Image (cartoon, rainbow, N blue to C red):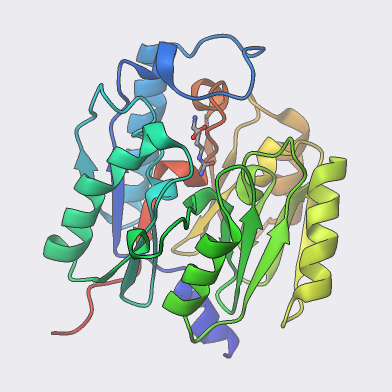
Length: 283
Ligand code: CIR
């Protein structure tokens, strides 16, 4: 795969997003309560900004209404993995999130013409999209509380043209992308914590290709979105030191700062809030 082709893997014509359920505040899953409860109005404002920015990047955004029975429904990334015209519909690892797949499956198949593959066909397989790091050339899949080996293997069968390496996460970590993501083609952004660095080591030892890395002081800030030659990353208000580092290291990249304070309180990062789809396959 040459670099021009890799850049194409980070181009999106479509996105799926979902509005914020009012039940997010009390019922969304969270690893601890230390950040306090999300402010619903502010979360919705932050989600609107996210969606507006995707639209400004020329992306046709399919925006779905929230469902109060699904408190985490705005975190659509976990529900499906979409590349090269294939949409893998996951079985999310937490039972309260499994109902989120229905709306997303419908749009991927009927409106966006993706070839849908169902993880539910494989008995016992679970996978959250937050555990899936796609570099444009290969996949790394976090084995976490949400994603198991059967899920990772099912993903490997689904995207058979790419190497897929499972990465064992420490017990305390939610997802692989809770502390890393692609900051641009060939560049992995990673947090400074022990858990993040341990996962990175395993990635480096298993990788089929070479990557450079950018280390951020804050784990959460290492979750950013690179799409349509634009880097969407944490704001100065949320993570001043990490934001400064993005600014310094990517002076020639179009960058957008995105607030995420309310989603972070329930473990939501920037990538979680959308599914990006390259294009509709030719009929
Ligand atoms: C959860 O625990 O499932 C949600 N509260 C947060 C999901 C975040 N998703 C992601 O990082 N991909």
